[in-house]
Length: 255
Image (cartoon, rainbow, N blue to C red; front, side):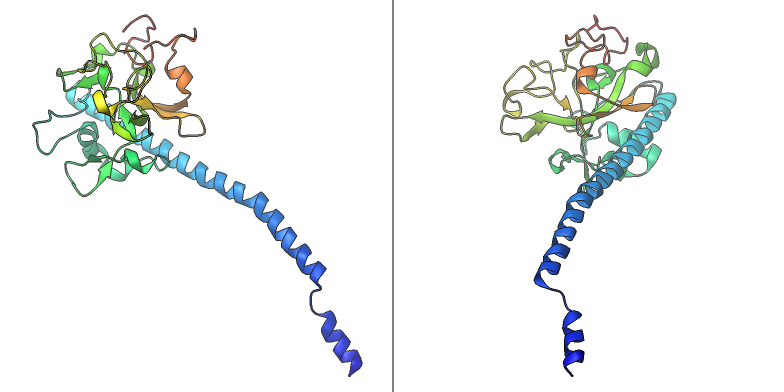
């Protein structure tokens, strides 16, 4: 009986052994959780890349059909409002494609014309150079001399107030400098008044470096790539802001 009892006792864990097991689990968790987090982030970035490619293809087909780029929005008097995403939606038939899975929820502020129960936002249109309903105007194919070097869409944060809240512009992006044509507002950017924060870019709907410091960009010829904000805002790399990636001419001196 004593031998059997001792064998039964030996089958259990001592306190030290239990602590060792717990420590091993903790170490493995510390190693694996960041790996899983990076894998999840990578999957989201892959989805975003797929989205931007589809948006680029839709833009290409729209331009072929209409021989010009879409306006960023219909006039405010129109109901329901139609925006660039509404114009491209028929070419993809999937409204989820216009939502970046990495974007924050506060940029999902625009309602679909075809489905008022769903919202989108977070991909912004280069409206100052390609299509602005405030004038109104839309660029033709011939107006965009360098489509492979002209931003059409990019991840956007929208216009942000000083407290971090969204003031508007969740579906557009502004260039770093006011365009020669302008935005249609005194600020030269999308925002005005209480929509804006302080600082030189306070009214700008600014690209969002949400992909580990990179921005998903779709160009006017339909191709997409990831870029740094410092590059998007400085075409010639001289350390000064310019609109070279934005103005349709790939010309850093042109506004």
